[in-house]
Image (tube, rainbow, N blue to C red):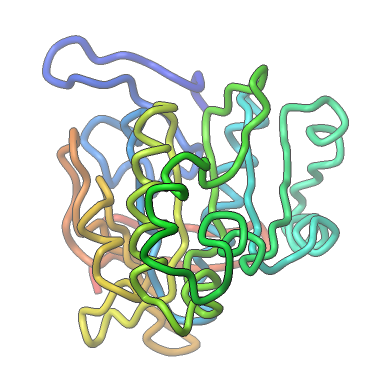
Length: 252
């Protein structure tokens, strides 16, 4: 794996973060992800969304980077166990402080920002004064993972507008901190439905869809990515004992 970050001064406006997943980086002409982009990772259950994000974060951590991982469902122990299955032992990064995993109850998000699960129109102005979540002031992550946005809307049954408001504030927050953010969302690529409300894919700088055709064939597709020239085909993706392997030359 090359250096964590490199600059291309000729054609591109942003520094590039190399993910360390060789076939994934090759999907981008620049050789990695533009720094500061907000990327929606979409796919149905079992398509490999969390594995992809965790593998990217582990590779960045292994090269001296920092990661802030927000989980709305899985515990820190659960995340650690799932990563160790692929040989990604993150204890050293948790101990050194380069990785922070924050488990958040999505109900607490709604109560904090809107006063209740249902919320009210009068809470809108107040909610803008409260950040979507807190990152320690001395911690400057190279990547932030949100796992997953679907958990927020699942508990926001009475007021979809609260979810949409939270989304807008969340994406604005990530734009301000200027780090790569990977936001996981349940989607169904067969129906071209990549998110719960449709607003997520509009706000995101990038949209990556994971296709789970059957047990023998998976695919990945970069549908959009600002500041980047990229492969737009659905290409082969496999999940094996070492994690995710992508073969850009093998179209599906």
